[in-house]
Image (cartoon, rainbow, N blue to C red):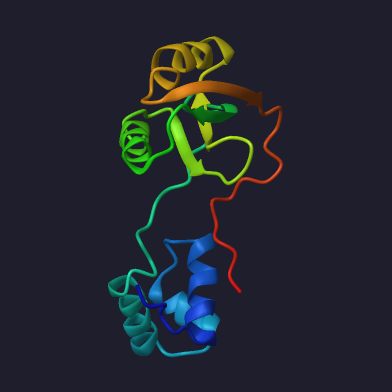
Length: 156
């Protein structure tokens, strides 16, 4: 896939909507120094080219009883391509797994898992994570406090 060429206006648009995806095109145009029409054209182009994948709400995890965060190191018994595909597909079906990253290092994957509390996390670990395809071991690190958690991509 070819990288999309972004100019300073495109980057400004991305920086602003990463913080506030509901910003109106008029306000966005004012903030980047263009008129509404070219700003809207640029925004649509960024969406069409797959630079902007979508818009979503930031949910207060405390309000929905999902503030417990654990990071789980996962080692697999098999790391051939078919095993990785099976693991990846299965991970996508576990709603408590918020993020899953393949890691180059002492373990194979790092999961970010959200749950109500440590007891519910223990159940997710035992009944859903440990039984994922090819899991040989896990190691859990419980987050004590989220110091920075934006979900934003850092712009160059």
